[in-house]
Amino acid sequence: MFLSPTSTPLTIIVFLLIEGTASVLQADIIILKPVADTALNQTNPDFNLGGLTNLDSGTTASGEINRAVLKFDIAGSVPPYANIRRVEMSLTVVSRPTQQCIYSLHRLLRDWGEGNGADSNSGSSAKNGEATWQARFFPDILWSAPGATAPADFVEVPSGTQSISEGTTAFTSSTSSPGIIADVQDWLNHPASNFGWILICDDEGTAGTVRSFGSREDPATAASLLVDFDFAPPSVSLFAVADTSLFEYAPDNNLGAVSLVSGTIGSMGNAKRSRALIRFTTQDIPTNAVLTSATLKLTQYRAPGGGSAPGVFSLYRILKPWGEGNKEGSRGSPAEPSEATWNARFFPSALWSAPGGASPEDFSLLASSTQTTTAFTFTNLLADVEFWLAHPEQNFGWILISENEETPYTARRFYSREAGDPRYAPTLVLEYVFPPEIEQTEIVGNQCNLYFVAQAGQAYFAQSRDSLSSGNWMTFTNIIAQSITSKVLISDPVTGSLRFYRIGL
Image (cartoon, rainbow, N blue to C red; front, side):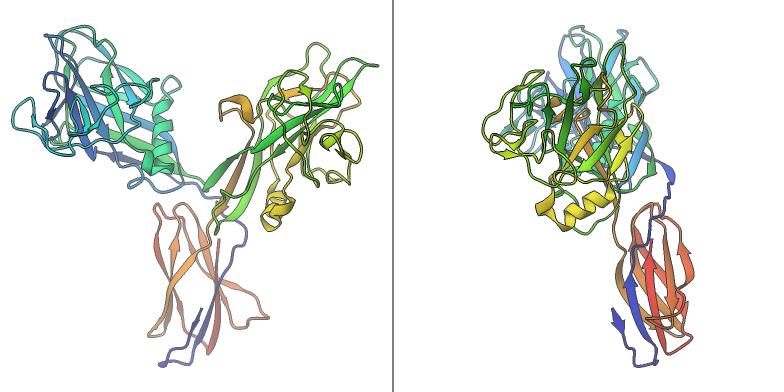
């Protein structure tokens, strides 16, 4: 970017520089009020109650059911890339019966319209787009069943459960209620999926359990959501797009649809090796992101018995393509054409340079990462991922090899991408930063002003020098991490006819 003002001979040249990263974590707490809340009332199934000062949930003395729905604006309130540490959702009981009740929060999976029905204690006839017992958006967009039901309208497993009697009660995130944190974190990362929670009395079959809670129309008693968070580098979690094992015990079998195995199976004299292949695609990495770290996480679910040897495993970058296949069974099944086996990259004729693969023909001579603990979190993989970004046609993934293949009982089994639960599947976590975006430069009096967008939780520095090709860059200001993404002004006195600037992080 060049600026040649007529009022001064100073020429400014601005560079954007990514030079290392700043490991800055800041913590903060915010308290949110609902942006929408209403109740679903079985007694008046086509009424909306969105304008009332109370939310009812539970069963009336006559056996009619009520359920409350409420939503908070997470993405509009919490900075992007925040790490949610603690969540508390507090409700104030404004009216209660004698019967006790345990209440559960369930994450909603479908959108709904709050409405403003308030003609009586039971609301009023719904208008177009308002939520009722029958409809998410009256009159035509219905719940999957009146009053909403799982799993179509909300998640069957509660995000949090709490016994509520009177006064103010909080659903607190804890080891027993981790779902509240998970919901808020996901709504921050994926705002379009935020439809809020539905509050349900667990004993709807018992009459007289209904409670009235304060709604957002009464600020003094409205629900509140405490969110405790810190700033972490933005990241993306990638799941394997292909994985399989090479099994010396059955050298022409494919194991593409079962768990991954790596290490040596069997006793001395009958020991057979196994090696795992894993590949990820890099297409989900933001196009303007600058990667700062790459970590592969594997979850072990079986280790060898009695005489097991220490597990030391290494990842090597694969240099040739291979076929995942879809065979099941602890030893796999005979391979079909184009499936990987111990002997072949693509069965039956495209072979590894040696059975099981060999370096440097099939995979790199040097390990990309080595893990000596049971955690199986492989770090320092950034160079491989950057290479694949620059050369996507050479992205063939990694091979996982035990460094003790000559020792029996070293084999470990790991969950594969077919595990059925993404929490256990091989995951590649990439942290990244965005280059600072210079939006404006100007000369005001004897000051050079630079404006750029600072990402939340990220520290920056600004440097200058008088020559493009020589001299030391001098830091003239440091910008501490901001609590929210915002535009920042940097000023530097005009002292010469030529000045070069750069902003880094």
